[in-house]
Image (cartoon, rainbow, N blue to C red; front, side):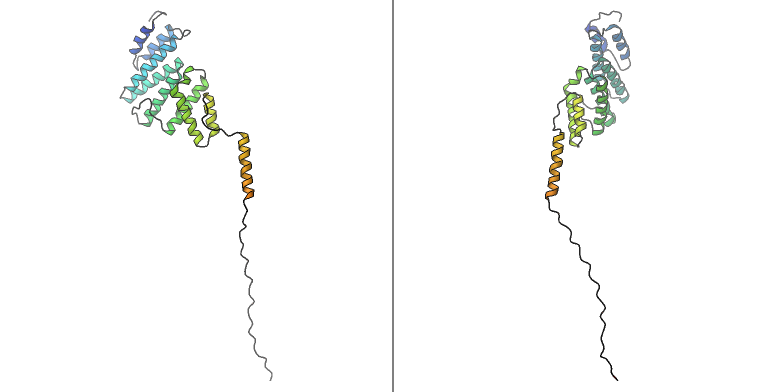
Length: 220
């Protein structure tokens, strides 16, 4: 690697030879010889990330699999590929939930794993909000699903904030100030229109005077 005008096919050939232990050399070559201005570096880094992700999916050893996933995550993040980064994080969390077992790309996360995944995505989006791959269908579907879960638990404000952060439509009704006022007024009217039945308080029994037995008067 000593020329700045390397063809895409040459980079692809080197990327396919990368392993979880040799990928840094390929990435270093891309940093040096793949121009960032025309998007060459991003393309090479994404190709390397995809290759390492595929390598991780076919690894039986948990340690090698985790190393390949970490390497793929690094490449995707340097490439500015939000969808690829999110997919790597998801696979890492799936591995933890299954004790290192392999899950398909479309596997569902448990609630705890889903929450951790969303927290990572929110932080990453805060740092890199302009990446075009945030519009990836699988990514927007996952964020929308989490927003609906929040709304179903009553956290409508948090769900709305999440979806608006990712510029996604809100699929549920958001209560407005007028709606909240009307709801409060209706509740007050209903409360005043219901007759209140006072509990019957038993009257305490009056103490009875002891009866005095009368005797006939005695006259000597």
